[in-house]
Image (cartoon, rainbow, N blue to C red; front, side):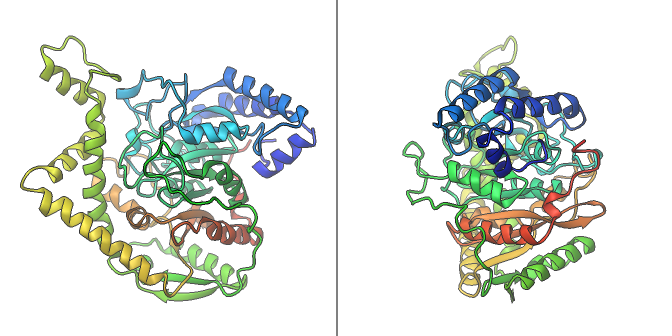
Length: 485
Protein backbone atom coordinates (compact mmCIF):
# COMPACT_ATOMS: atom_id res chain seq x y z
CA UNK A 1 0.00 0.00 0.00
CA UNK A 2 2.95 2.35 0.48
CA UNK A 3 3.26 2.78 -3.30
CA UNK A 4 -0.24 4.26 -3.61
CA UNK A 5 -0.75 7.99 -4.08
CA UNK A 6 -2.92 9.97 -1.67
CA UNK A 7 -5.72 10.02 -4.25
CA UNK A 8 -5.53 6.23 -4.58
CA UNK A 9 -5.41 5.78 -0.79
CA UNK A 10 -8.47 7.99 -0.32
CA UNK A 11 -10.37 5.98 -2.93
CA UNK A 12 -9.32 2.67 -1.36
CA UNK A 13 -10.41 3.80 2.08
CA UNK A 14 -13.84 4.92 0.90
CA UNK A 15 -14.29 1.69 -1.06
CA UNK A 16 -13.29 -0.23 2.11
CA UNK A 17 -10.49 -2.14 0.33
CA UNK A 18 -8.37 -1.47 3.42
CA UNK A 19 -8.72 0.48 6.64
CA UNK A 20 -6.83 3.50 7.90
CA UNK A 21 -5.52 1.40 10.78
CA UNK A 22 -4.03 -1.09 8.30
CA UNK A 23 -2.61 1.72 6.18
CA UNK A 24 -1.15 3.56 9.17
CA UNK A 25 0.32 0.40 10.68
CA UNK A 26 2.00 -0.34 7.36
CA UNK A 27 3.77 3.02 7.36
CA UNK A 28 4.69 2.72 11.05
CA UNK A 29 6.24 -0.68 10.31
CA UNK A 30 8.24 0.82 7.43
CA UNK A 31 9.47 3.67 9.63
CA UNK A 32 10.56 1.20 12.31
CA UNK A 33 12.33 -1.03 9.78
CA UNK A 34 13.90 1.53 7.46
CA UNK A 35 14.30 4.96 9.04
CA UNK A 36 17.49 3.95 10.79
CA UNK A 37 19.07 4.31 7.34
CA UNK A 38 17.73 7.82 6.71
CA UNK A 39 17.13 9.51 10.10
CA UNK A 40 14.15 11.32 8.59
CA UNK A 41 12.01 11.32 11.76
CA UNK A 42 12.72 13.00 15.10
CA UNK A 43 9.54 11.77 16.79
CA UNK A 44 7.26 8.87 15.79
CA UNK A 45 3.72 8.98 17.23
CA UNK A 46 2.74 5.33 16.84
CA UNK A 47 0.10 5.09 19.56
CA UNK A 48 -1.50 8.44 18.71
CA UNK A 49 -1.44 7.65 14.99
CA UNK A 50 -3.27 4.36 15.43
CA UNK A 51 -5.88 6.06 17.62
CA UNK A 52 -6.41 8.75 14.97
CA UNK A 53 -6.62 6.06 12.29
CA UNK A 54 -9.30 4.20 14.25
CA UNK A 55 -11.26 7.45 14.60
CA UNK A 56 -10.93 8.04 10.84
CA UNK A 57 -12.23 4.54 10.12
CA UNK A 58 -15.23 5.23 12.35
CA UNK A 59 -15.90 8.55 10.57
CA UNK A 60 -15.65 6.83 7.17
CA UNK A 61 -18.08 4.14 8.28
CA UNK A 62 -20.51 6.79 9.52
CA UNK A 63 -20.27 8.76 6.29
CA UNK A 64 -19.03 11.80 8.20
CA UNK A 65 -15.39 11.91 7.10
CA UNK A 66 -13.16 14.76 5.96
CA UNK A 67 -11.62 14.97 2.50
CA UNK A 68 -8.37 13.34 3.65
CA UNK A 69 -9.87 10.99 6.22
CA UNK A 70 -7.50 8.20 7.20
CA UNK A 71 -4.51 9.43 5.17
CA UNK A 72 -1.24 9.19 7.14
CA UNK A 73 1.10 12.19 6.85
CA UNK A 74 4.14 13.56 8.67
CA UNK A 75 4.75 17.10 9.91
CA UNK A 76 8.03 18.96 9.76
CA UNK A 77 9.19 19.48 13.33
CA UNK A 78 8.77 23.24 12.97
CA UNK A 79 4.96 23.04 13.28
CA UNK A 80 3.63 23.09 16.83
CA UNK A 81 1.68 19.97 17.77
CA UNK A 82 -0.42 19.85 20.92
CA UNK A 83 1.16 17.42 23.39
CA UNK A 84 3.90 16.28 21.00
CA UNK A 85 7.46 17.56 21.22
CA UNK A 86 8.28 20.28 18.69
CA UNK A 87 12.03 20.76 18.68
CA UNK A 88 12.89 22.62 15.46
CA UNK A 89 15.78 20.11 15.42
CA UNK A 90 17.53 22.21 18.08
CA UNK A 91 18.94 21.48 21.52
CA UNK A 92 17.29 24.76 22.47
CA UNK A 93 13.80 23.23 22.09
CA UNK A 94 14.61 19.58 22.75
CA UNK A 95 12.22 19.54 25.72
CA UNK A 96 9.49 21.82 24.30
CA UNK A 97 5.97 20.35 24.16
CA UNK A 98 3.46 22.90 22.79
CA UNK A 99 -0.01 23.27 24.36
CA UNK A 100 -1.63 23.92 20.96
CA UNK A 101 -1.58 22.92 17.29
CA UNK A 102 -0.34 25.11 14.45
CA UNK A 103 -3.16 26.17 12.11
CA UNK A 104 -1.75 23.93 9.37
CA UNK A 105 -1.85 20.96 11.74
CA UNK A 106 -5.38 21.83 12.85
CA UNK A 107 -6.70 22.11 9.29
CA UNK A 108 -5.14 18.85 8.16
CA UNK A 109 -6.43 17.18 11.30
CA UNK A 110 -9.94 18.50 10.55
CA UNK A 111 -9.61 17.02 7.06
CA UNK A 112 -9.06 13.64 8.73
CA UNK A 113 -5.33 13.06 8.32
CA UNK A 114 -3.37 10.80 10.67
CA UNK A 115 -0.06 12.14 12.06
CA UNK A 116 2.72 9.56 11.83
CA UNK A 117 5.26 11.81 13.52
CA UNK A 118 7.56 14.82 13.22
CA UNK A 119 10.32 14.94 10.62
CA UNK A 120 13.94 15.97 10.95
CA UNK A 121 15.15 19.31 9.57
CA UNK A 122 17.99 21.81 9.65
CA UNK A 123 18.09 23.53 13.03
CA UNK A 124 15.51 26.32 13.08
CA UNK A 125 15.21 25.76 9.30
CA UNK A 126 18.69 27.23 8.74
CA UNK A 127 20.55 25.17 6.18
CA UNK A 128 20.45 23.64 2.72
CA UNK A 129 21.55 20.09 3.48
CA UNK A 130 19.83 18.90 6.70
CA UNK A 131 23.21 18.55 8.37
CA UNK A 132 22.68 21.21 11.07
CA UNK A 133 20.09 19.17 13.01
CA UNK A 134 20.80 18.52 16.70
CA UNK A 135 19.57 14.96 16.01
CA UNK A 136 22.06 14.26 13.24
CA UNK A 137 22.06 14.54 9.47
CA UNK A 138 19.31 13.11 7.29
CA UNK A 139 20.46 10.85 4.44
CA UNK A 140 19.11 10.90 0.90
CA UNK A 141 17.21 7.69 0.01
CA UNK A 142 18.68 7.81 -3.51
CA UNK A 143 22.23 7.65 -2.12
CA UNK A 144 22.74 7.51 1.64
CA UNK A 145 26.14 9.18 1.30
CA UNK A 146 24.47 12.31 -0.09
CA UNK A 147 22.39 15.05 1.50
CA UNK A 148 18.60 15.19 1.05
CA UNK A 149 18.62 18.99 0.88
CA UNK A 150 17.24 21.31 3.51
CA UNK A 151 15.78 22.56 5.57
CA UNK A 152 12.79 20.24 4.99
CA UNK A 153 15.12 17.31 4.26
CA UNK A 154 13.43 14.93 6.70
CA UNK A 155 10.04 15.46 5.07
CA UNK A 156 11.52 14.98 1.58
CA UNK A 157 13.45 11.85 2.55
CA UNK A 158 10.43 10.32 4.32
CA UNK A 159 8.22 10.79 1.25
CA UNK A 160 10.92 9.60 -1.17
CA UNK A 161 11.58 6.46 0.89
CA UNK A 162 7.82 5.75 1.11
CA UNK A 163 7.82 6.16 4.90
CA UNK A 164 4.94 8.64 4.52
CA UNK A 165 2.73 9.42 1.53
CA UNK A 166 3.09 13.15 2.18
CA UNK A 167 4.55 15.63 4.63
CA UNK A 168 4.41 19.30 5.46
CA UNK A 169 7.43 21.52 4.88
CA UNK A 170 8.39 25.17 5.16
CA UNK A 171 10.16 27.33 2.62
CA UNK A 172 12.10 30.46 3.61
CA UNK A 173 14.55 30.49 0.70
CA UNK A 174 13.89 27.20 -1.07
CA UNK A 175 13.51 24.79 1.82
CA UNK A 176 10.56 22.90 0.28
CA UNK A 177 11.68 23.06 -3.35
CA UNK A 178 15.39 22.26 -2.93
CA UNK A 179 14.96 19.03 -0.90
CA UNK A 180 12.02 18.03 -3.13
CA UNK A 181 14.35 18.34 -6.12
CA UNK A 182 17.22 16.42 -4.51
CA UNK A 183 14.95 13.59 -3.31
CA UNK A 184 12.82 13.29 -6.45
CA UNK A 185 9.44 14.34 -5.06
CA UNK A 186 6.98 17.20 -5.68
CA UNK A 187 7.04 20.24 -3.40
CA UNK A 188 4.98 23.44 -3.50
CA UNK A 189 5.91 26.75 -1.89
CA UNK A 190 2.66 28.79 -1.89
CA UNK A 191 2.34 32.56 -2.18
CA UNK A 192 3.37 34.32 1.02
CA UNK A 193 0.26 34.55 3.18
CA UNK A 194 -1.66 31.78 1.42
CA UNK A 195 -0.98 29.24 4.21
CA UNK A 196 -1.19 30.32 7.85
CA UNK A 197 2.06 30.80 9.76
CA UNK A 198 0.39 30.53 13.18
CA UNK A 199 2.19 27.88 15.18
CA UNK A 200 5.00 27.59 12.63
CA UNK A 201 8.14 28.45 14.59
CA UNK A 202 9.59 31.57 12.99
CA UNK A 203 12.92 31.84 11.20
CA UNK A 204 12.42 34.91 8.96
CA UNK A 205 8.89 36.20 9.30
CA UNK A 206 8.60 38.00 5.97
CA UNK A 207 9.89 34.97 4.04
CA UNK A 208 8.61 31.82 5.82
CA UNK A 209 5.78 29.89 4.16
CA UNK A 210 4.43 26.39 4.79
CA UNK A 211 3.47 24.03 2.00
CA UNK A 212 2.91 20.40 0.96
CA UNK A 213 5.46 17.79 -0.08
CA UNK A 214 4.22 14.63 -1.81
CA UNK A 215 4.95 12.38 -4.75
CA UNK A 216 2.70 14.12 -7.27
CA UNK A 217 1.09 17.45 -8.10
CA UNK A 218 -2.32 15.84 -7.68
CA UNK A 219 -1.46 14.90 -4.10
CA UNK A 220 -0.12 18.41 -3.39
CA UNK A 221 -3.39 19.87 -4.73
CA UNK A 222 -5.41 17.67 -2.36
CA UNK A 223 -3.30 18.82 0.58
CA UNK A 224 -3.51 22.48 -0.43
CA UNK A 225 -7.30 22.30 -0.46
CA UNK A 226 -7.11 21.76 3.29
CA UNK A 227 -4.00 23.80 4.17
CA UNK A 228 -4.73 27.08 2.38
CA UNK A 229 -6.99 29.88 3.54
CA UNK A 230 -7.31 32.98 5.68
CA UNK A 231 -6.42 32.71 9.36
CA UNK A 232 -7.70 35.62 11.50
CA UNK A 233 -5.06 34.75 14.11
CA UNK A 234 -2.22 35.33 11.64
CA UNK A 235 -1.68 38.98 10.72
CA UNK A 236 0.26 37.99 7.59
CA UNK A 237 -2.50 35.68 6.29
CA UNK A 238 -4.09 36.70 2.97
CA UNK A 239 -7.85 37.19 3.06
CA UNK A 240 -8.59 35.67 -0.33
CA UNK A 241 -10.93 32.94 -1.51
CA UNK A 242 -9.31 29.51 -1.87
CA UNK A 243 -9.99 27.75 -5.18
CA UNK A 244 -10.40 24.00 -5.59
CA UNK A 245 -6.82 23.18 -6.53
CA UNK A 246 -7.84 19.78 -7.89
CA UNK A 247 -10.48 21.12 -10.29
CA UNK A 248 -8.17 22.47 -13.00
CA UNK A 249 -5.41 19.88 -12.97
CA UNK A 250 -6.28 18.45 -16.40
CA UNK A 251 -6.61 21.83 -18.15
CA UNK A 252 -4.82 22.08 -21.52
CA UNK A 253 -1.44 23.85 -21.73
CA UNK A 254 -2.19 25.19 -25.22
CA UNK A 255 -1.14 28.84 -25.41
CA UNK A 256 0.78 28.76 -22.12
CA UNK A 257 3.85 31.03 -22.23
CA UNK A 258 6.79 29.74 -20.19
CA UNK A 259 9.64 32.17 -19.58
CA UNK A 260 13.21 30.87 -19.41
CA UNK A 261 15.49 33.35 -17.62
CA UNK A 262 18.91 33.32 -19.25
CA UNK A 263 20.36 33.96 -15.80
CA UNK A 264 19.22 30.46 -14.72
CA UNK A 265 20.99 28.63 -17.54
CA UNK A 266 24.49 30.06 -17.39
CA UNK A 267 27.71 29.30 -15.54
CA UNK A 268 27.29 27.25 -12.40
CA UNK A 269 24.59 24.93 -13.75
CA UNK A 270 25.66 21.29 -13.88
CA UNK A 271 25.65 20.10 -17.55
CA UNK A 272 23.68 16.91 -16.87
CA UNK A 273 21.14 18.86 -14.83
CA UNK A 274 20.81 21.37 -17.67
CA UNK A 275 20.26 18.53 -20.14
CA UNK A 276 17.46 17.08 -18.00
CA UNK A 277 15.81 20.50 -17.60
CA UNK A 278 15.88 21.18 -21.34
CA UNK A 279 14.35 17.74 -22.00
CA UNK A 280 11.56 18.51 -19.51
CA UNK A 281 10.92 21.87 -21.17
CA UNK A 282 10.72 20.14 -24.56
CA UNK A 283 8.04 17.87 -23.08
CA UNK A 284 6.05 20.91 -21.99
CA UNK A 285 6.35 22.24 -25.55
CA UNK A 286 4.82 19.00 -26.82
CA UNK A 287 1.92 19.59 -24.45
CA UNK A 288 1.20 22.95 -26.09
CA UNK A 289 3.32 25.44 -24.17
CA UNK A 290 5.48 28.08 -25.83
CA UNK A 291 9.00 28.72 -24.50
CA UNK A 292 10.07 32.37 -24.31
CA UNK A 293 13.62 33.57 -23.58
CA UNK A 294 13.57 36.28 -20.92
CA UNK A 295 15.94 38.14 -18.64
CA UNK A 296 15.21 38.28 -14.92
CA UNK A 297 16.54 41.67 -13.88
CA UNK A 298 18.43 41.93 -10.59
CA UNK A 299 18.47 38.15 -10.02
CA UNK A 300 22.16 38.50 -9.13
CA UNK A 301 21.10 40.44 -6.03
CA UNK A 302 19.09 37.55 -4.55
CA UNK A 303 21.82 35.86 -2.51
CA UNK A 304 23.34 38.97 -0.87
CA UNK A 305 19.87 40.43 -0.27
CA UNK A 306 18.53 37.24 1.30
CA UNK A 307 21.56 36.75 3.53
CA UNK A 308 21.06 40.17 5.07
CA UNK A 309 17.27 40.11 5.48
CA UNK A 310 16.86 36.50 6.65
CA UNK A 311 19.57 36.64 9.35
CA UNK A 312 18.28 40.02 10.52
CA UNK A 313 14.78 38.62 11.01
CA UNK A 314 16.22 35.45 12.56
CA UNK A 315 18.20 37.54 15.05
CA UNK A 316 14.97 39.21 16.16
CA UNK A 317 12.86 36.04 16.22
CA UNK A 318 15.40 33.98 18.13
CA UNK A 319 15.97 36.62 20.81
CA UNK A 320 13.10 35.04 22.75
CA UNK A 321 15.20 31.94 23.50
CA UNK A 322 17.00 33.26 26.56
CA UNK A 323 16.93 30.38 29.04
CA UNK A 324 14.25 32.08 31.13
CA UNK A 325 10.79 31.25 29.79
CA UNK A 326 11.04 27.92 27.96
CA UNK A 327 13.56 25.80 26.12
CA UNK A 328 17.12 24.93 27.09
CA UNK A 329 18.67 26.48 30.22
CA UNK A 330 22.34 26.13 31.13
CA UNK A 331 23.28 24.54 34.45
CA UNK A 332 24.21 26.64 37.47
CA UNK A 333 24.38 30.12 35.92
CA UNK A 334 26.48 32.59 37.90
CA UNK A 335 24.17 35.53 37.14
CA UNK A 336 21.57 36.70 34.62
CA UNK A 337 24.15 37.56 31.96
CA UNK A 338 25.76 34.14 32.34
CA UNK A 339 22.31 32.53 32.04
CA UNK A 340 21.65 34.35 28.77
CA UNK A 341 25.02 33.84 27.14
CA UNK A 342 25.57 30.21 28.12
CA UNK A 343 21.99 29.11 27.42
CA UNK A 344 22.12 30.60 23.94
CA UNK A 345 25.69 29.52 23.23
CA UNK A 346 25.02 25.94 24.32
CA UNK A 347 21.47 25.70 23.00
CA UNK A 348 22.07 26.93 19.43
CA UNK A 349 24.26 25.20 16.86
CA UNK A 350 27.01 26.83 14.79
CA UNK A 351 24.90 27.80 11.77
CA UNK A 352 22.17 29.37 13.92
CA UNK A 353 24.75 31.32 15.93
CA UNK A 354 26.40 32.43 12.69
CA UNK A 355 23.15 33.83 11.31
CA UNK A 356 22.22 35.51 14.60
CA UNK A 357 25.58 37.29 14.62
CA UNK A 358 25.25 38.41 10.99
CA UNK A 359 21.68 39.58 11.54
CA UNK A 360 22.45 41.44 14.74
CA UNK A 361 25.35 43.21 13.03
CA UNK A 362 23.15 44.22 10.05
CA UNK A 363 20.58 45.73 12.42
CA UNK A 364 23.03 47.48 14.73
CA UNK A 365 23.39 51.25 15.02
CA UNK A 366 25.51 52.65 12.23
CA UNK A 367 25.01 49.64 9.97
CA UNK A 368 21.22 49.45 9.59
CA UNK A 369 21.11 51.90 6.65
CA UNK A 370 24.17 50.39 4.99
CA UNK A 371 22.97 46.80 5.10
CA UNK A 372 19.36 46.12 6.13
CA UNK A 373 17.81 49.18 4.46
CA UNK A 374 19.83 48.58 1.28
CA UNK A 375 18.75 44.93 1.26
CA UNK A 376 15.10 45.94 1.47
CA UNK A 377 15.60 48.32 -1.46
CA UNK A 378 17.22 45.51 -3.45
CA UNK A 379 14.29 43.28 -2.53
CA UNK A 380 11.94 45.75 -4.19
CA UNK A 381 14.06 45.66 -7.37
CA UNK A 382 13.94 41.86 -7.39
CA UNK A 383 10.14 41.89 -7.14
CA UNK A 384 9.94 44.46 -9.93
CA UNK A 385 12.11 42.18 -12.08
CA UNK A 386 9.58 39.38 -11.68
CA UNK A 387 6.68 41.76 -12.37
CA UNK A 388 8.30 42.80 -15.65
CA UNK A 389 8.77 39.17 -16.70
CA UNK A 390 5.15 38.31 -15.94
CA UNK A 391 4.06 40.97 -18.41
CA UNK A 392 5.61 38.75 -21.10
CA UNK A 393 4.92 35.21 -19.82
CA UNK A 394 2.48 33.23 -17.67
CA UNK A 395 5.02 31.26 -15.66
CA UNK A 396 8.80 31.11 -15.29
CA UNK A 397 10.71 27.82 -15.41
CA UNK A 398 14.25 26.62 -14.81
CA UNK A 399 16.32 24.34 -12.62
CA UNK A 400 15.52 24.13 -8.91
CA UNK A 401 19.15 23.48 -7.94
CA UNK A 402 22.54 23.91 -9.66
CA UNK A 403 23.11 20.15 -9.62
CA UNK A 404 22.07 16.85 -8.03
CA UNK A 405 22.50 16.06 -4.33
CA UNK A 406 26.06 16.58 -3.08
CA UNK A 407 27.93 14.41 -0.60
CA UNK A 408 27.42 14.53 3.14
CA UNK A 409 29.99 16.88 4.64
CA UNK A 410 31.07 18.22 1.23
CA UNK A 411 29.99 21.80 1.95
CA UNK A 412 29.35 21.78 5.67
CA UNK A 413 32.47 23.81 6.46
CA UNK A 414 32.00 26.26 3.59
CA UNK A 415 28.92 28.41 4.34
CA UNK A 416 29.21 30.42 1.12
CA UNK A 417 29.26 27.29 -1.06
CA UNK A 418 26.23 26.02 0.88
CA UNK A 419 24.38 29.30 0.37
CA UNK A 420 24.97 29.10 -3.40
CA UNK A 421 22.89 25.91 -3.49
CA UNK A 422 19.83 28.18 -3.18
CA UNK A 423 20.78 30.49 -6.05
CA UNK A 424 17.63 29.67 -8.09
CA UNK A 425 15.15 29.63 -5.21
CA UNK A 426 15.86 32.61 -2.94
CA UNK A 427 14.42 35.35 -5.17
CA UNK A 428 10.98 33.70 -5.12
CA UNK A 429 10.71 34.16 -1.35
CA UNK A 430 11.96 37.73 -1.51
CA UNK A 431 9.16 38.48 -4.00
CA UNK A 432 6.54 36.45 -2.10
CA UNK A 433 5.68 34.37 -5.18
CA UNK A 434 4.43 30.76 -5.44
CA UNK A 435 6.79 28.16 -6.89
CA UNK A 436 7.17 24.41 -7.00
CA UNK A 437 9.70 21.74 -7.87
CA UNK A 438 8.79 18.59 -9.77
CA UNK A 439 10.94 15.58 -10.67
CA UNK A 440 12.30 16.05 -14.20
CA UNK A 441 15.07 13.54 -14.77
CA UNK A 442 18.29 12.14 -13.35
CA UNK A 443 21.87 13.40 -13.19
CA UNK A 444 24.61 11.23 -11.72
CA UNK A 445 21.86 8.68 -10.89
CA UNK A 446 20.13 11.19 -8.62
CA UNK A 447 16.97 13.27 -9.16
CA UNK A 448 16.79 16.62 -10.91
CA UNK A 449 14.03 19.14 -10.15
CA UNK A 450 12.27 21.48 -12.57
CA UNK A 451 11.19 24.70 -10.88
CA UNK A 452 7.98 26.47 -11.90
CA UNK A 453 7.36 30.02 -10.65
CA UNK A 454 3.98 31.73 -10.89
CA UNK A 455 2.26 35.04 -10.28
CA UNK A 456 0.94 35.79 -6.81
CA UNK A 457 -1.82 33.35 -5.80
CA UNK A 458 -1.46 31.38 -9.04
CA UNK A 459 -0.77 28.02 -7.36
CA UNK A 460 -3.59 26.39 -9.33
CA UNK A 461 -1.81 27.11 -12.62
CA UNK A 462 1.48 25.69 -11.32
CA UNK A 463 -0.27 22.53 -10.15
CA UNK A 464 -2.02 22.23 -13.53
CA UNK A 465 1.30 22.45 -15.43
CA UNK A 466 2.96 20.00 -13.06
CA UNK A 467 0.08 17.53 -13.30
CA UNK A 468 0.03 17.61 -17.10
CA UNK A 469 3.80 17.05 -17.15
CA UNK A 470 3.48 14.16 -14.70
CA UNK A 471 0.66 12.65 -16.75
CA UNK A 472 3.05 12.54 -19.73
CA UNK A 473 6.20 11.41 -17.86
CA UNK A 474 7.06 9.00 -15.08
CA UNK A 475 9.95 10.77 -13.31
CA UNK A 476 7.77 11.29 -10.22
CA UNK A 477 7.08 7.54 -10.06
CA UNK A 478 10.73 6.50 -9.86
CA UNK A 479 11.71 4.72 -6.69
CA UNK A 480 15.07 5.23 -4.91
CA UNK A 481 17.29 2.13 -5.09
CA UNK A 482 16.07 -0.08 -2.26
CA UNK A 483 14.07 2.82 -0.86
CA UNK A 484 10.62 1.30 -1.38
CA UNK A 485 11.49 -2.29 -0.54
